[in-house]
Image 1: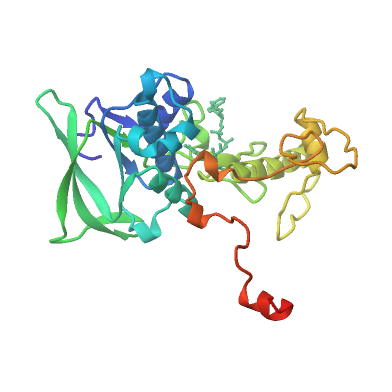
Image 2: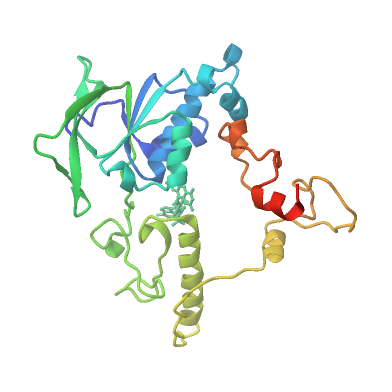
Length: 305
Ligand SMILES: Cc1cc2nc3c(=O)[nH]c(=O)nc-3n(C[C@H](O)[C@H](O)[C@H](O)COP(=O)(O)OP(=O)(O)OC[C@H]3O[C@@H](n4cnc5c(N)ncnc54)[C@H](O)[C@@H]3O)c2cc1C
């Protein structure tokens, strides 16, 4: 535990995101420090930035995200959000894409620094964090002797540093790390008839949890039938029929008239999997593909232009 982290304005990242999703959070104070480095901490920083943008929206009206992007310079004068991580920036745990998202919202990111102390004001509130340069040894931060030390001022500290399970009532399954161990078929070792999957085994991705659930469901079926489970394939992939999955989710496809149409992204007969970057960043005109203005040399040579 970091000295001073029990200040009332030091909060947990998941609680922060939960409050935001539940609509209980409409603004953040001026200077926010997020301590983390994983994908969750990036979510916290981007929510904090967007909230600060909304708080500064025109005539007090919540601005839309797109409008936030367009008026980024003006509106994002709001909260100053800083993310710090014990990992060097080159090895930050969050995916490069998530980090790029945070940077596009002007989040300051400091890597290779560990919080040493939460600095408090006379009322006991956090007013800043004192940091020291660190390196990672066996996944733990170790202070660099004589390394730089600095303070960052803040009005709110949000910790997004790992998650652990709440196994109240399930203590017998606790593997001692507030998690539940899983065997090859996601059975709980030493607990016949018990199966487990998802983040409680090890926090990862939604698709991982779904994969665990798929294997566990098949194993439960075999277990209940009193049969011997077959060996699972080395590459244990799960395939599904897209049309059936859409139907199952109540997204029935409509018939295609086989006539030429323009713009199908809202059409009931087309399935799109696209990423609308414009929702989160302004793409400079120089980086956009605006058609071929000048034939390339190879093309010129071939066509004689
Ligand atoms: C901030 C954040 C951002 C993320 N972003 C992504 C992302 O972009 N992409 C991605 O793939 N993954 C992401 N993840 C990870 C992903 O959310 C998890 O890997 C996934 O939700 C794990 O699924 P799960 O079913 O194991 O657990 P959960 O989704 O946590 O579901 C567990 C459920 O069990 C309930 N529960 C808990 N205890 C009990 C009990 N005793 N009795 C009954 N019910 C109980 C809980 O209320 C909860 O509904 C993110 C995670 C976080 C925290």
